Image 1 (cartoon, rainbow, N blue to C red):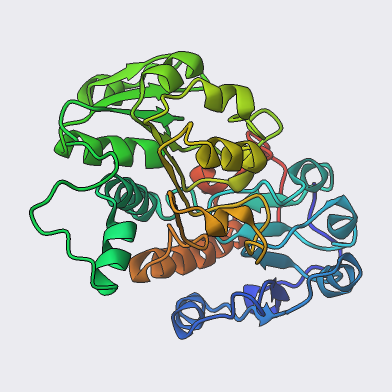
Image 2: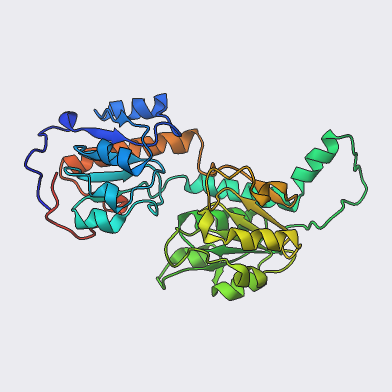
Amino acid sequence: MSHPESAPVSLAECRIVRLNAELFPPSPEEREACGRFGIEPVPVESESVAELQQVVAGADAVFAVSVKLPAEVIAAMDRCRVISRMGAGTDRIDVQEATRRGILVTNVPDFCVEEQADHAMAMLLALERQLKRMDHDTAAGHWTGSRKVSGRNHRLPGRTLGLVGFGRSAKAMARRARGFGLRVLATRRREVDDPEVAELEVELVGLEELLARSDYVSLHLPLTAETRHLLDAQALSRMKPDAILINTSRGAIVDEDALVTALDENRLRGAGLDVFEVEPLPADSPLLSLQNVLLSGHVAGLDNESHEGTFEMVADTIVKLHSGEWPTDRIVNMKGVSDWTW
């Protein structure tokens, strides 16, 4: 994993390619943050494999927002040292191929933690309080007044929130849930000594028990081979018919067809979805016609602060790696490697 023979000496000489420029054009804040660190990424709009292979050839570093980088694209990175994911999830990058070629994959581990929790809680509240329907009815001149609200809605204190996963965003969600008087259950993939379980008064349980006991289920997992369609038809059938599902993590964790069926047949009360199996959400998606669904377009982590913090950490990571530092918390692969150089 040595330094490529033709590598530039200074960071200013490095060719850094910034992908996804069409869907996610670099903002003035991104350019300003990179400029402060002496970095000028070249924005590129290519999306096809063939185009990407041409673009990444000769690049010393690649910045990626959400583009898919399969093995055949990574194989074309003949001098690349770092693939920097401008976000947290790396499920669209073939990390194994990058590792095989000695390319570091980095991310922004704290990206949008608070924002995602805010968005998930906002969806939960909006669905519980039926704000989508109430807004539509009131705007159409149907005044409810002091009459009983039609449909099912409940007070939050004493009800149960189930967090599938117990990482950073789930813990942020647990803090918010406690403020509303909710009991909190959570699953976790590994047994670790975590003082925040007790501090946040969270009860750790298995997935089946969590689904059966929770009034609200919020997903906080990365997309992996193990978590793909984790909530399939069988898992959804374990949830209470009065339950609400919130997904702000990755769309494919839920079997979307099974979810549509459960919602359409009123075997679930509602769902708040920010992520989908296919993005952008197709115009013919049956989710668009369901009244008990609240939708947003993969924006749970977006606000001014998350944008600025992401740009600064991505640029800072590149500077640190080029100067020989090793920001462990931002490195996804090649843990413990000692002979990587740039």
